[in-house]
Figure 1 (cartoon, rainbow, N blue to C red):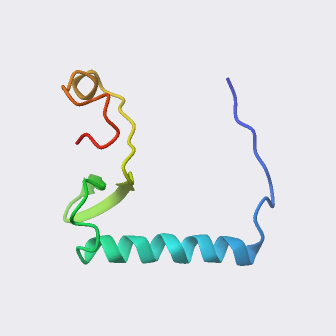
Figure 2: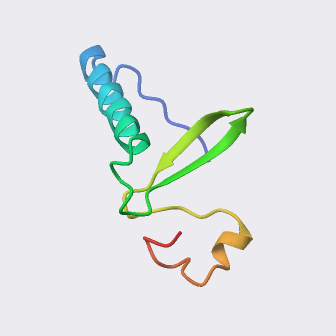
Length: 79
């Protein structure tokens, strides 16, 4: 086990474009742009503020026993 770190893998311009695309996706989701698909999971509430939103785009990961025991846990679009 370990971590491999790649320094300067993306240029500054590439990082700015990735961040812009992520912000745009977040804004569109908050405006209801993806309401027709099971897409997001918000967690880590701090007061009234959401500190993390995960986007799954028809795929997801499970990590708790309760999630793995759900009947649709083997389906990518399960909720």
